[in-house]
Image (tube, rainbow, N blue to C red; front, side):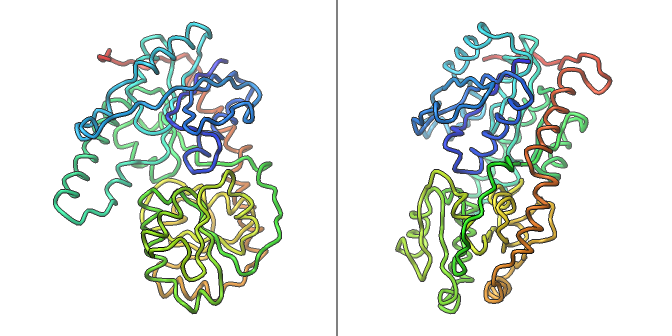
Length: 393
């Protein structure tokens, strides 16, 4: 079948959680033998010839820019891009589209375009965004009002548009429970974040004194987790025992904002890299000191796939099926587990086994096929159409 895949993400290079999710969705759908027409952004002007996937054709679209007033008014939650609509028309004229997969963020207002043409839609979420927004610190009245406004806009978008999709993808059981409050449960499908196990077969030489934290440090949950770790956990005793590598976008800016420098007590920010796999594979352990968030942590899955032990808060591994994490939820506990940690190959192997059972591409490709079967034929095997009302552009 022909699948139109649309996302507001630039999946390449796949050097961040949301990018990795979109990349592996495209790859998994293509591996089922379907023709994928992928409409993606390419903010870094990456040569897409270096990221060719069998059965995948790429189209790129520009990011729709909203000024401050537009964002304050919430237009970014409801206003469609004419350039994106033109691209939809171009693709639909060239291909007979069987299913549209719309991935990431608040893009539900594009569902009607496909429903009006008899094309079923699978809507992909990367998390239950209002659950994250509700956790954003708000230390003054203006911040509290802004948080309330964002929550209102996000929930309004979800309730206006999500129900128009034939199927909804969620990445965790908590997210499933959230969405089933306003979407029929038979249309909500659990497809966790996953990775292609064949791409995570590195066996780098472990560096006994190195711990690594990988993240987009521009996201508040990662920044706040790092801030808590540096200010509440890290001290001279730990610095004499381990080096910390911060790997990912805005890591240098985050460390400098917290400490005033890009290197602090054996904590070094390495910035954005094209691929974090090597850094995780050679680290003695991965730290995930998160206090906020929802969904399935891709940074956690990458460490599992690469057999690297994980030291984390409960929130840092929330929603991931494994009993082989090293958990610490207070500064005192976190410091204690780091001081007593010497690396453990057995833990790494156990994490890899847990990864293969639940988060491998092989397992989740089959889950995606089940979603497509339901989208096209329903539970009883009869072609179904999602009934929706016409909405204005």
